[in-house]
Amino acid sequence: MLAVVGTVPDRPPEVLEGHVSLNREKLFLAGQEIAVGRGTTALLAAAAKTASLLGDSPPYACLAGDIGTGDGSIKLYAHLAQKIGSWGARVIAFHYILPDVDWHNRVLFALDALEPRPLLIADAGYMYVAKMSGQAQSYDLFTPDVGELAFLADEQAPHPFYTRGFLLKEENRVPELIARAYKNEDASRWLLVKGVSDYVVAREGVLSVIKEPVVEAMEAIGGTGDTVTGMAAALIASGIEVARACEWAARANRLAGKLADPTPATQIGRIIEEIPKALEEVVRTRP
Amino acid sequence: MKSLLKKFRRDTQKSPKPSAEGRQGKGILVFRSTGEVIRAERVLRAKGKQVRVMGPPPQIQTGCDMVIEFALMEQLEVKRILGDVGLEPLEMVPVESPLLSPVGLYHVKELGAYLMVRAANMKLTVEKGTGLIVNVSGGGCPDVPYLAQELVGQNLREAPQPLELGHTLCGYALQMAFEEAMRRCSQ
Image (cartoon, rainbow over all chains, first blue to last red; front, side, top):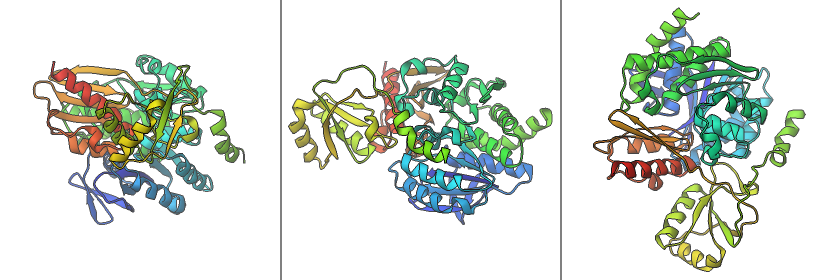
């Protein structure tokens, strides 16, 4: 089972959990409708589409409302520290949350006690706090974009906002940033770096680079990174090997973009609609 | 046990190292939340104070943090200005070591009729001819989906500033992108 943890903007700062359902591009959790926009809801929608295609159960979600004040995030951390072991999840994807090192470490202690230990994926705020806490190597997969990779590569930066300029200028030197992040022990076991080219990486080096199809408008569309992470998480939970799942997710996301024929003004829901067709095509042609 | 110990060792082994820039005669204001920092910066700048948002020293970092750097000689006046609007810093302390600087680089990309501006990890895309905000991407703090929800579909000139709605460093980065987009669209 895949579990997804994150925050959403249009809910009170209370924790809501259960299996999600996706009906006509709307998410439902514990009987309540949650609008799909960029962020954790886009990740969940992509994961739900992927799970449905694979014949798996829909993702289990643990969400709290938060508009940045941190109220919902703190309740979410506290809930996780208590309950995360009871889910029986094979894979857990951690997403939007206000970074808090102390709470992060409490949740990690709870996870360390689990046998078997779930495979841990982190993106967005949870990836920031995982790196800041010095515990990046406790995670199996991070899914940064190139700017966030520069943050992982900067051993001094506690948040991407403080990434030093000489690293941010290195957009065309992704392999060097990857090497630097691993050298500093600030990278997870695998990385899926999202950008003009997508990189699937293990500690040993770059495993694959995905460059096609090119859909330039997607960089501007909020949520396109979330959908890649959602697809990868659902594929991994279905038993697909991590590196292959990342490669399929990256290819399918690009293809979904191409099928949607977007402009920079297109919203993420339009890309999500195309995920089943795109993923099916990728799995069929790249077994 | 090894991983248990590692959790505690990290702080001393990998604390952010300060840059070499000196900060003689400077102090920092520490607040409860990033939202308070954003508000305090706005109030102090409106009163003509030369303040800067900076990264906190390692010993007080908890996450999405920033502090305000100010001239120590203005301590009393700063305190009064903040007190007038009900803002009380947790601490006002001299800077003993150099601080982390916020990212200062912008990446601007033309996408046909649209302009995408990136500041740090946040991207704002606007329609060049109209100033319409069409997308917000990047970021990882919880106010990002909220800011996207509130800003997309609004015109740059009429939309609320991200600093008015945001609470985190991602919100602050989006404000930088917003201002740069505004500057470029009004050229």
